[in-house]
Length: 226
Image 1: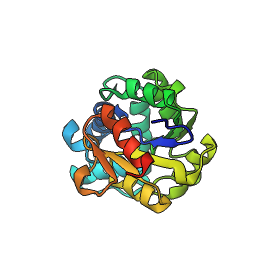
Image 2: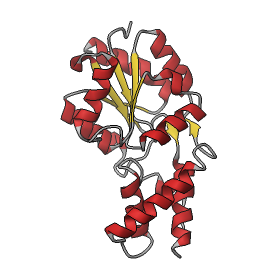
Image 3: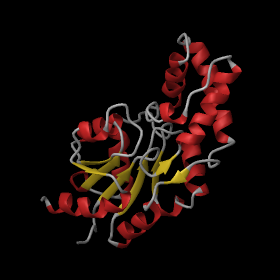
C-alpha cells in the first residue's frame, strides 16, 4: 500500500533516538555541581519528554529539595551547555529506524519531526546521526510560540509538509505525544520502548509497536481504516 499524501510526524527522544545516556550525563553533571547525588540512566528515561526545564526540575526533586524558578533557569542553562557538548556521545538510533524511514519515504510518505527538544540541538542531533535528510520539516520546542501537547505544534508540522489534517499520524512514546494527538484529533502509534512514566501499553494509543520495523504494517492498517 502506498503512503502517498500521508504526513507522518515523529517524536524524537525515545521514539527515533535513544538519547537517555547523554541526557542523563548532562543532568548528572549539573546535579554533581550542586552537591546532589547522580541518577541512573534508567531513572532519567522516565523523566524525558516534557522539555529541558521540567527534566531538570524533576531530577532535582528526585535528589533532594525542589529548586526555585531562578535556580531552575540557571541549572537548565548549565544542563544545555553540558548536553550540547555531548549530543551523540552515547545516543544511538533505535534498531530499524534508518531503514524503516527510508522505506516509508519510498512509499510516498512525507516525514516530519515534532519534539520538545530545543530546535538547534534537534538539528545537530539529527545531523550527527545521519537522519537530517529524511525530514523536510523539523520543529523543536522553541521553533514556535507553542509546543506539545499543544496540537498546533503537530498541525504546523503537517501544514509545512503540505499535508491534510485528516491524513496525518503522530508516532511517539509518551503521554505528551498521546495528548498532542488527541488534542489534534489525529491517530497515534506508540512505541513501547521509549520514555514514559505510564507504560505505553496503558496510554490508549491507536496502535502499539515494540520494534520500529513494525511501523509500516500498523500504519497500513490505520491508513486503510482497518
